[in-house]
Image (tube, rainbow, N blue to C red):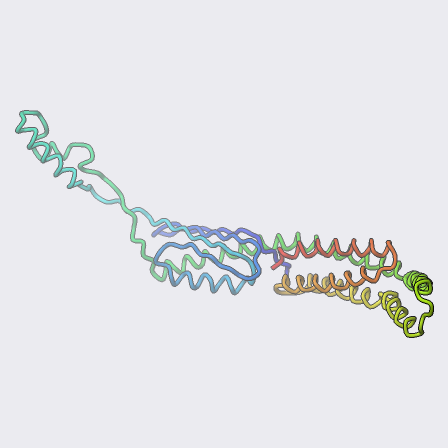
Length: 295
Protein backbone atom coordinates (compact mmCIF):
# COMPACT_ATOMS: atom_id res chain seq x y z
CA UNK A 1 0.00 0.00 0.00
CA UNK A 2 1.26 3.47 -0.89
CA UNK A 3 2.43 5.71 1.92
CA UNK A 4 -0.34 8.24 2.54
CA UNK A 5 0.00 11.85 3.56
CA UNK A 6 -2.56 13.68 5.68
CA UNK A 7 -3.12 16.85 3.67
CA UNK A 8 -5.17 16.84 0.51
CA UNK A 9 -8.18 18.07 -1.39
CA UNK A 10 -10.94 16.22 -3.23
CA UNK A 11 -13.92 17.42 -5.22
CA UNK A 12 -16.82 15.93 -7.14
CA UNK A 13 -20.01 17.38 -8.52
CA UNK A 14 -23.15 16.08 -10.13
CA UNK A 15 -26.57 17.07 -11.36
CA UNK A 16 -30.01 15.58 -11.89
CA UNK A 17 -33.42 16.85 -12.86
CA UNK A 18 -33.98 17.98 -9.28
CA UNK A 19 -30.78 20.00 -8.83
CA UNK A 20 -26.99 20.32 -8.80
CA UNK A 21 -24.50 19.47 -6.03
CA UNK A 22 -20.80 19.75 -5.18
CA UNK A 23 -18.75 17.80 -2.62
CA UNK A 24 -15.46 19.28 -1.38
CA UNK A 25 -13.08 17.56 1.05
CA UNK A 26 -10.03 19.16 2.69
CA UNK A 27 -7.70 17.80 5.35
CA UNK A 28 -4.70 18.78 7.45
CA UNK A 29 -2.55 16.85 9.92
CA UNK A 30 -4.13 15.36 13.00
CA UNK A 31 -3.31 12.83 15.70
CA UNK A 32 -6.57 11.01 15.09
CA UNK A 33 -9.46 11.20 12.63
CA UNK A 34 -11.60 14.29 13.11
CA UNK A 35 -14.47 14.72 10.64
CA UNK A 36 -16.37 17.99 10.35
CA UNK A 37 -19.40 17.98 8.08
CA UNK A 38 -21.24 20.89 6.55
CA UNK A 39 -24.34 19.69 4.73
CA UNK A 40 -27.79 21.14 4.02
CA UNK A 41 -30.58 20.57 6.52
CA UNK A 42 -32.64 17.45 6.10
CA UNK A 43 -29.67 15.16 5.48
CA UNK A 44 -29.09 13.65 8.93
CA UNK A 45 -29.06 10.10 7.55
CA UNK A 46 -26.57 11.15 4.88
CA UNK A 47 -24.28 12.65 7.54
CA UNK A 48 -24.07 9.29 9.32
CA UNK A 49 -23.32 7.40 6.10
CA UNK A 50 -20.73 9.99 5.06
CA UNK A 51 -18.74 9.55 8.27
CA UNK A 52 -19.01 5.78 7.95
CA UNK A 53 -17.52 5.82 4.45
CA UNK A 54 -14.72 8.20 5.46
CA UNK A 55 -13.73 6.05 8.45
CA UNK A 56 -13.61 2.98 6.19
CA UNK A 57 -10.90 4.63 4.05
CA UNK A 58 -8.90 6.91 6.36
CA UNK A 59 -7.56 6.70 9.90
CA UNK A 60 -5.91 10.07 10.61
CA UNK A 61 -6.31 13.73 9.74
CA UNK A 62 -8.60 16.68 10.40
CA UNK A 63 -11.15 16.54 7.59
CA UNK A 64 -13.59 19.23 6.54
CA UNK A 65 -16.32 17.94 4.23
CA UNK A 66 -18.78 20.30 2.61
CA UNK A 67 -21.82 19.53 0.47
CA UNK A 68 -23.53 22.31 -1.46
CA UNK A 69 -26.88 21.58 -3.10
CA UNK A 70 -28.80 23.87 -5.42
CA UNK A 71 -32.31 22.76 -6.28
CA UNK A 72 -33.71 23.46 -9.73
CA UNK A 73 -35.94 26.49 -10.04
CA UNK A 74 -39.50 25.87 -11.13
CA UNK A 75 -41.09 28.62 -13.20
CA UNK A 76 -44.31 29.87 -11.68
CA UNK A 77 -47.19 31.80 -13.21
CA UNK A 78 -48.02 35.47 -12.67
CA UNK A 79 -47.96 36.48 -9.05
CA UNK A 80 -49.91 39.43 -7.63
CA UNK A 81 -48.35 41.38 -4.80
CA UNK A 82 -51.59 41.73 -2.86
CA UNK A 83 -50.02 43.88 -0.15
CA UNK A 84 -48.79 46.40 -2.72
CA UNK A 85 -52.12 46.31 -4.55
CA UNK A 86 -54.05 47.02 -1.31
CA UNK A 87 -51.73 49.89 -0.45
CA UNK A 88 -52.13 51.47 -3.89
CA UNK A 89 -55.91 51.06 -3.70
CA UNK A 90 -56.04 52.93 -0.41
CA UNK A 91 -53.85 55.68 -1.78
CA UNK A 92 -56.11 55.90 -4.85
CA UNK A 93 -59.18 56.47 -2.72
CA UNK A 94 -57.42 59.08 -0.61
CA UNK A 95 -56.11 60.92 -3.65
CA UNK A 96 -59.54 60.84 -5.27
CA UNK A 97 -60.94 62.64 -2.24
CA UNK A 98 -58.25 65.28 -2.69
CA UNK A 99 -59.09 65.59 -6.38
CA UNK A 100 -55.66 64.30 -7.39
CA UNK A 101 -55.28 61.93 -10.28
CA UNK A 102 -54.28 58.31 -9.59
CA UNK A 103 -55.37 55.06 -11.24
CA UNK A 104 -58.97 54.63 -10.22
CA UNK A 105 -59.78 51.15 -11.43
CA UNK A 106 -58.35 47.65 -10.92
CA UNK A 107 -56.93 47.25 -14.42
CA UNK A 108 -54.92 50.43 -14.07
CA UNK A 109 -53.66 49.42 -10.64
CA UNK A 110 -52.55 46.01 -11.94
CA UNK A 111 -50.50 47.69 -14.65
CA UNK A 112 -48.34 49.46 -12.10
CA UNK A 113 -44.80 48.00 -11.98
CA UNK A 114 -44.34 45.52 -9.19
CA UNK A 115 -47.97 44.61 -8.66
CA UNK A 116 -47.78 41.61 -11.01
CA UNK A 117 -44.51 39.68 -11.37
CA UNK A 118 -43.51 36.61 -13.33
CA UNK A 119 -41.20 34.74 -11.01
CA UNK A 120 -39.68 31.39 -10.25
CA UNK A 121 -39.31 29.34 -7.12
CA UNK A 122 -36.99 26.58 -6.04
CA UNK A 123 -38.20 23.04 -5.92
CA UNK A 124 -38.69 21.42 -2.53
CA UNK A 125 -35.60 21.15 -0.31
CA UNK A 126 -36.51 17.62 0.78
CA UNK A 127 -34.29 14.67 -0.17
CA UNK A 128 -35.79 11.27 -0.94
CA UNK A 129 -33.85 7.97 -0.97
CA UNK A 130 -32.98 8.22 -4.66
CA UNK A 131 -31.57 11.71 -4.22
CA UNK A 132 -29.47 10.63 -1.26
CA UNK A 133 -28.17 7.64 -3.21
CA UNK A 134 -27.03 9.99 -6.00
CA UNK A 135 -25.30 12.23 -3.46
CA UNK A 136 -23.50 9.25 -1.89
CA UNK A 137 -22.29 8.02 -5.27
CA UNK A 138 -20.82 11.46 -5.85
CA UNK A 139 -19.27 11.37 -2.36
CA UNK A 140 -17.38 8.21 -3.31
CA UNK A 141 -15.95 10.05 -6.31
CA UNK A 142 -14.83 12.93 -4.08
CA UNK A 143 -13.23 10.49 -1.61
CA UNK A 144 -11.33 8.80 -4.44
CA UNK A 145 -10.08 12.18 -5.65
CA UNK A 146 -9.12 13.07 -2.09
CA UNK A 147 -7.32 9.74 -1.63
CA UNK A 148 -5.29 10.32 -4.79
CA UNK A 149 -4.17 13.70 -3.47
CA UNK A 150 -3.03 12.16 -0.17
CA UNK A 151 -1.26 9.35 -2.03
CA UNK A 152 0.59 11.94 -4.12
CA UNK A 153 1.78 13.66 -0.95
CA UNK A 154 2.72 10.28 0.50
CA UNK A 155 4.92 9.49 -2.51
CA UNK A 156 6.81 12.75 -2.01
CA UNK A 157 7.17 12.03 1.71
CA UNK A 158 8.45 8.52 1.00
CA UNK A 159 11.29 9.92 -1.09
CA UNK A 160 12.21 12.45 1.61
CA UNK A 161 12.06 9.94 4.47
CA UNK A 162 14.08 7.34 2.56
CA UNK A 163 16.76 9.94 1.95
CA UNK A 164 16.90 10.80 5.65
CA UNK A 165 17.25 7.12 6.58
CA UNK A 166 20.08 6.80 4.05
CA UNK A 167 21.85 9.70 5.77
CA UNK A 168 21.26 8.17 9.22
CA UNK A 169 22.70 4.87 8.05
CA UNK A 170 25.78 6.62 6.66
CA UNK A 171 26.37 8.49 9.91
CA UNK A 172 25.84 5.31 11.90
CA UNK A 173 28.65 3.67 9.94
CA UNK A 174 30.87 6.70 10.59
CA UNK A 175 30.11 6.44 14.29
CA UNK A 176 31.00 2.73 14.30
CA UNK A 177 34.32 3.48 12.65
CA UNK A 178 35.20 6.27 15.07
CA UNK A 179 34.04 4.14 18.02
CA UNK A 180 36.90 1.73 17.36
CA UNK A 181 39.16 4.32 18.96
CA UNK A 182 36.88 4.64 21.96
CA UNK A 183 38.56 2.03 24.24
CA UNK A 184 42.01 3.61 23.80
CA UNK A 185 40.67 7.09 24.48
CA UNK A 186 38.79 5.89 27.56
CA UNK A 187 41.93 4.11 28.79
CA UNK A 188 43.89 7.35 28.52
CA UNK A 189 41.22 9.18 30.48
CA UNK A 190 41.18 6.43 33.08
CA UNK A 191 44.93 6.69 33.60
CA UNK A 192 44.65 10.46 33.82
CA UNK A 193 41.90 10.07 36.39
CA UNK A 194 44.00 7.70 38.51
CA UNK A 195 46.89 10.13 38.43
CA UNK A 196 44.58 12.91 39.52
CA UNK A 197 43.29 10.78 42.37
CA UNK A 198 46.83 9.99 43.50
CA UNK A 199 47.44 13.70 43.78
CA UNK A 200 44.24 14.20 45.76
CA UNK A 201 44.49 11.19 48.08
CA UNK A 202 47.46 9.70 49.95
CA UNK A 203 46.39 6.16 49.20
CA UNK A 204 43.98 4.80 46.57
CA UNK A 205 42.13 1.71 47.64
CA UNK A 206 41.46 -1.17 45.29
CA UNK A 207 37.74 -0.55 45.77
CA UNK A 208 38.08 3.03 44.52
CA UNK A 209 40.10 1.87 41.52
CA UNK A 210 37.41 -0.71 40.72
CA UNK A 211 34.70 1.95 40.91
CA UNK A 212 36.54 4.26 38.54
CA UNK A 213 37.32 1.38 36.19
CA UNK A 214 33.64 0.39 36.06
CA UNK A 215 32.60 3.93 35.14
CA UNK A 216 35.11 4.21 32.31
CA UNK A 217 34.46 0.66 31.08
CA UNK A 218 30.76 1.48 30.69
CA UNK A 219 31.68 4.46 28.53
CA UNK A 220 34.16 2.55 26.42
CA UNK A 221 31.61 0.22 24.79
CA UNK A 222 29.06 1.81 22.44
CA UNK A 223 28.53 -1.27 20.29
CA UNK A 224 25.11 -2.04 21.75
CA UNK A 225 23.85 1.47 21.02
CA UNK A 226 25.13 1.33 17.44
CA UNK A 227 23.64 -2.13 16.89
CA UNK A 228 20.23 -0.98 18.13
CA UNK A 229 20.52 2.18 16.05
CA UNK A 230 21.10 0.11 12.90
CA UNK A 231 18.18 -2.16 13.81
CA UNK A 232 15.87 0.85 14.17
CA UNK A 233 16.95 2.18 10.78
CA UNK A 234 16.09 -1.19 9.23
CA UNK A 235 12.74 -1.13 11.02
CA UNK A 236 12.10 2.34 9.61
CA UNK A 237 12.67 1.10 6.06
CA UNK A 238 10.32 -1.82 6.66
CA UNK A 239 7.62 0.51 7.94
CA UNK A 240 7.95 2.81 4.93
CA UNK A 241 7.51 -0.13 2.57
CA UNK A 242 4.72 -1.73 4.60
CA UNK A 243 0.94 -1.47 4.52
CA UNK A 244 -1.70 0.50 6.37
CA UNK A 245 -1.37 3.60 8.53
CA UNK A 246 2.20 3.95 9.76
CA UNK A 247 2.47 7.48 11.12
CA UNK A 248 2.16 6.57 14.80
CA UNK A 249 4.58 3.65 14.52
CA UNK A 250 7.14 5.88 12.81
CA UNK A 251 6.68 8.48 15.54
CA UNK A 252 7.42 5.87 18.20
CA UNK A 253 10.46 4.73 16.21
CA UNK A 254 11.83 8.28 16.40
CA UNK A 255 11.76 8.04 20.20
CA UNK A 256 13.84 4.86 20.06
CA UNK A 257 16.32 6.38 17.63
CA UNK A 258 16.73 9.42 19.87
CA UNK A 259 17.28 7.24 22.93
CA UNK A 260 20.19 5.40 21.32
CA UNK A 261 21.83 8.53 19.94
CA UNK A 262 21.52 10.36 23.28
CA UNK A 263 23.29 7.46 24.99
CA UNK A 264 25.93 7.41 22.26
CA UNK A 265 26.66 11.11 22.77
CA UNK A 266 26.81 10.76 26.54
CA UNK A 267 29.40 7.96 26.21
CA UNK A 268 31.47 9.72 23.57
CA UNK A 269 35.14 10.12 24.43
CA UNK A 270 36.05 12.10 21.31
CA UNK A 271 34.88 15.26 19.60
CA UNK A 272 34.55 13.38 16.31
CA UNK A 273 32.10 10.86 17.75
CA UNK A 274 30.15 13.65 19.43
CA UNK A 275 29.86 15.53 16.14
CA UNK A 276 28.58 12.43 14.36
CA UNK A 277 26.10 11.93 17.20
CA UNK A 278 24.84 15.48 16.77
CA UNK A 279 24.47 14.90 13.03
CA UNK A 280 22.41 11.81 13.83
CA UNK A 281 20.18 13.83 16.16
CA UNK A 282 19.64 16.44 13.45
CA UNK A 283 18.62 13.72 10.99
CA UNK A 284 16.22 12.18 13.50
CA UNK A 285 14.62 15.57 14.14
CA UNK A 286 14.11 16.00 10.39
CA UNK A 287 12.64 12.52 10.18
CA UNK A 288 10.25 13.25 13.05
CA UNK A 289 9.16 16.53 11.48
CA UNK A 290 8.29 14.85 8.18
CA UNK A 291 6.38 11.93 9.66
CA UNK A 292 3.93 14.34 11.25
CA UNK A 293 2.48 14.47 7.73
CA UNK A 294 2.16 10.68 7.41
CA UNK A 295 -1.18 8.96 8.00
